Length: 351
Image (cartoon, rainbow, N blue to C red; front, side, top):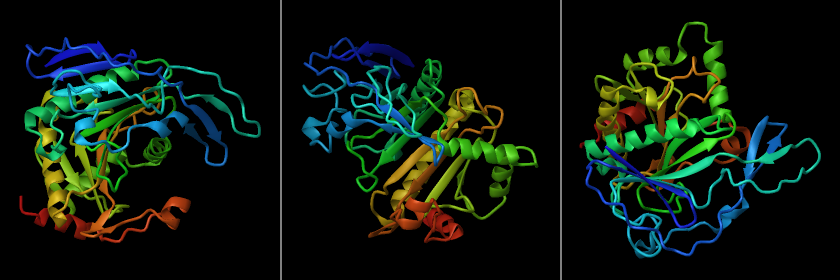
């Protein structure tokens, strides 16, 4: 793998990951770009014990451009990426978190305000605008994995970063703003609420490693969708979404950089099989969110177990599962599909 670091016209970092050593990334970004926005402000919610980022500059971010104007397709005048690439990672032009600190005033009451330090990056999985993650070759998936690993390690070392989150949003139903196959990475200045809740549950578990116990139970049950020597993909027993699959490595590791070479190489075949099964369910592209759960930078690393959560809000060919009153207001999920049925449906897809 060849790793090349360069910069965009406004100073943001751009990193190329290539399979060949002869790739030429000497092309420069010559656009006249506006100044980079200041970091969001974080406001503390005392009722929920959570931080909320207020990022006003994101209102102006690019929204569903044409193929000719896609900022992730290389080489044209509006592109964020000047030269062709295998995998490219760059700092988001409209970040939720950054180190470009502005002025922040307290709002009074019980809500503290502080700068939203951190970093947000865009990960372009391929230069092919019409591709999907499920279409990537095993070698390309390994390269994406190496980019995730590289960025997790680099971002975890930044001052003030407490957690690194790699994810992909796919499909207009999810709310994507760019259709080009890509994901994102958030480097948060706090440990996210879901991670805190998971780690608290792991700490309370009296029977050893909670994640290992879940994996062992699922491997012996009816909800496995795909597996190989190093990974198992299964529908969780208490799935919140109509189609939800978790991918666990068979060895407990806190984060992606801790995976060994065999585990990194064997992830792609299982994951892309699951994605193809999702797309084959109803004959339409399934909207989904793919979320890597990794250990925080410092807290809870002895409890965490890196794994991927994949879920879709599509419950039938022409129907979506909306997160309405119970889910959105109370955080109490009601699923429309029996998890065992969802696993059967996914396994029955002809690939």
